[in-house]
Amino acid sequence: MEAVRASAAWVASRSSHVTVDLQEIEKVVDQIKGDVPKVEWDFEGIHYFDNGPLTVQYLFVLDALNFCFWPDKDLSYDHLASGLKLALEKDKNALDSDRLQNYTGPQLRQLLNWPRPLPIEEERVRLLHEVGLELERSFGGQAANLVKSAENSAATLIELITRHFPGFRDHSLYKGHQVFLYKRAQIFVADLWGAFKGQNYGEFQDINSITIFADYIVPAVLRELGILKYGSNLSCSIDSNSEIVPGSEEEVEIRACSIYAVEKMRDLIGKKFGKQLLSIDIDLWLWSCGVQNMALSHHRTLSIYY
View 1 (spheres, rainbow, N blue to C red):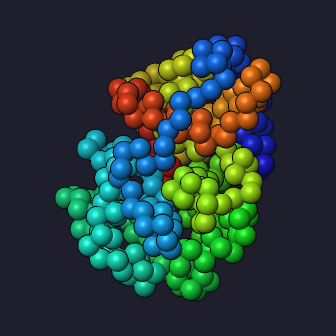
View 2 (view 1 turned 60 degrees about the vertical axis):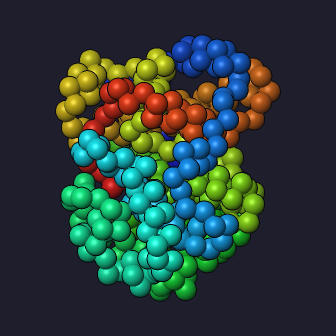
C-alpha cells in the first residue's frame, strides 16, 4: 500500500519521540545474512481452515475483532482465533452475516468461550454488526464475494474494505497530515495469502505492495533489536506500563516508524543480498519473536485498530 508507505516515511522524517537507527538496521540485516526464518501462517494450529468460502468469512470476522488484548493479562490473539475456530466447528452458521448483526456482548463471549467482558467489548460488538450488515447489503453476505470483487489485487481489496467498512479505516492525524496505517485491512490480505498459500482466495498479483502490520508486538521487537530508539519520556511511559493516548504523536510515531524501519530493512536486503523479501515474511518473523518473548515492554493504547 503506497499510501501507508508514504505516510510512514512522512512521519519518520518528522518524528521527535521515535528514531529509526539505520546503522542498527544494517547490523541486523548482516546478522541474518539478508534472510529471515520462514514462519508458516498457522504455525500454532489455532486457525479454522476448510479451503473454501467459510475460511474467508472466518478470517474477515477474525480480523474485524483482532485488536487490543492487553488490558486483560490472560487474553491473547490465540484465544480469539481458536475461539472462533471452535465456534465454527460446532456451528457452520455461527458467522453468517445475519447472525453477526445480532450478537450481544455476552453472546460474543460465549462464542469465544471467554468467561468475562472483553476489552472494548462494545466496540467489538459494534464492529461485528457493521461487518454483518455491510456484507449482507453489498456482498451477498459473503466475505468471499468481497475478495472476488478485488480481482486478485491486494491494494484493491484494501481499498474496498476501507471504503465499505468504517471500522477498518485506520487513519490518524499527525502534525496536520493524514496518516494511513491500515493494520487490520492489510493483515486480512496477509491471512488470506498465508492460509491459501497464494492460491484461490489468497492469490494476489501485488502481494509485495503490503507493508508490515503496525501493532504492539512488532515495535517492541524492533526496539529490542535497537532499530527503534525512544526518547526518555516515551521510554519511561512504556516501561512503566502507562497508557499512550490513541492518535497522540508518540503513538503514531511508534507505528509509522515501525513500518518505515522494516521498509528500509527490506530495501537494504534487496541491495546487499539481492533477495526480494515480502514485508509479510518479515512481519511474521518479528511477530513470532515477540510472542516468544512476552516479557518485552510494549506501548499500551486502547484502540480498535490493532
